[in-house]
Length: 401
Image (cartoon, rainbow, N blue to C red; front, side, top):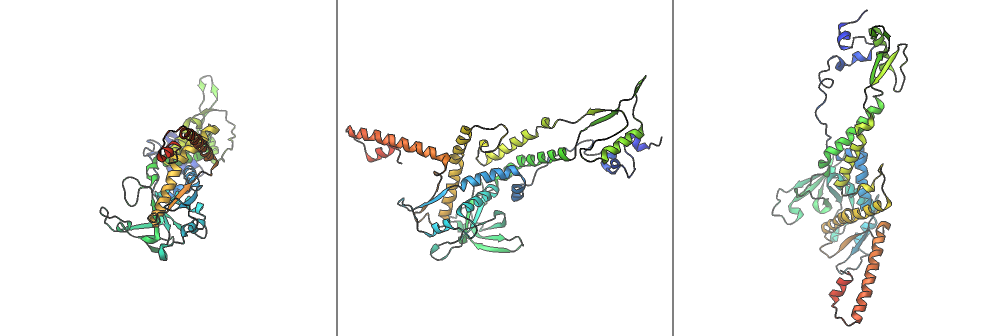
């Protein structure tokens, strides 16, 4: 029997035809095979765009928020509350740039804000403070050159000197502050460039990528894990396999294709050692991490597909809640900042994000209309009875304020 020292004690040999012996970790299992990998592996959250492209859960949450924000109808009003229909800003809304609609522009700005907590619009100022172009600029391509003076400045030009846009071919272009609209979601600490939301989502995003890799390894590389042992017996008990029998079965195992059966003339037992996939809690981990992403962007889990399913009422109420608590105020904040930086807010103009046309919110509008009608009828009866009511009290009574 030609059995080497290494094969006897460690189960490996130096036969170049055997896949087992080519793996140095099987000979010297000093790290991952004895002690295991103990350190956690975290993703680089500074690669926001890459994470957005590669992680489907992140993209689904970001694009759901962006699509909801872009579903609004922008309506412009003057200082007297009259709707404006003839203005250069209306022309921008109708055609912000050669390739995008206003809805596309808002969608892009929302994605940039979600990934970087900042968004930039190249909007060159023409004569008479008129702008005829709104082009969203990738946030990760813009450098902000600050003045170094922060505490005593009253205007943005006292904080920021200029912007530098870096092209993919490593060229760059300087953009004056009057030609750029800078939108940001404040992090409560930084005055100029806030920290991205994704920085605080490093752990759930890392776990999502890890569990996808784990599932792929289980599907592609790891089949049935267990022990093949001899079934042969004699009067003294079980007979072990000979080294030649072990070697032959081992070769068949490593050389076979995925899902290919081992055929052997040896009588063997199979003792499974694998852990059931469902007991690894991979899908539960994925759901928990996805909920963390949903919460970070102010959405609701009922807006996304789920194995458990949700009722129509839960979905409808969740959509209303998200619009009321997140989408409407964040979209309005975006519009307010655009109007302020374009100098239109100082002229008394106001750009409002209207969502009342959406069917899911139309029921609320109808209920409010009915409530106001009932209050108006009640007020009419009170006035007919001779009860003195001031104009301000009338407005408050029927909620006209």
